[in-house]
Amino acid sequence: MKNRLILILAVITGLVAAGGIYMFLSDMKKTYQINGDFVKVVVARQRIPAKAQITSQMFELKDIPAKYINERAAVDPKEVLGKITRSEILPGEQILRDKLANDKDASEGLSFLLQPGKRAVTIAVNEVSGIAGLVKPGDRVDVMGTFDLQGAVGQEKTSITSLLIQNADVLSIDQSTSPDAGNSQDGKKAAAAHTITLSVTPEQAQPLILCSEKGSIRLLLRPATDQENITLPSIKMNQLLR
Image 1 (cartoon, one colour):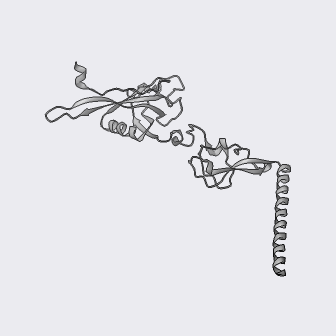
Image 2 (cartoon, one colour):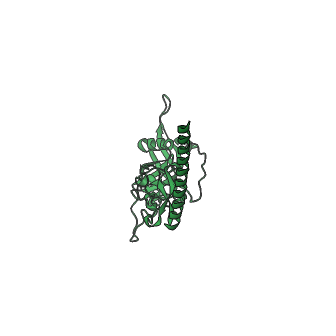
Image 3 (cartoon, one colour):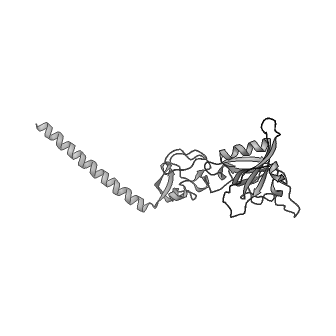
């Protein structure tokens, strides 16, 4: 009985001592943080691969001595949440602003210009189908397609023109994503574009690719503020002879 009482007293004494040490260390930590000029910084909670969209589970705020903070480190979660990483970020690493892509930033590749659910597709154009070289990255276009449609048995095939896609963003002209693409530096006439890259959905890409391969296409430049889709039926050759 005496031994059990001693054991209980020892356990209680140990718990009290542990609690006292914990409180002492907590107070020391708070004092050190105040005197040590700590600053909250956004650090990676896990490995974040390149070209990944950062979620709230991937990072945390951590107190770090000011003298060890990178001047480019993010200090506000809003600076990183939802951003796309340019390069890999390791666990515990301070998340630097220059490792995050800005909105519509093509400096690291065309993929940073694409919205979720969209794909980049390139079509060949000439001076006529490409609107005389006057379309620029950042514009929006509709695409018309003309192709031959096989008639019923005993009937001749006929040509048909259809509105393939509407309100597609122009990502690049040839290999340039700059709004000044195609502008001449010496006042001379700029060369017509050979290719135009559009941002489309996979469903829009199918008829666009098919018609560019088996028919012909024309771009229609939209007004800067017009984003409304229209309903436009296809037209056949014989409808022009009314």
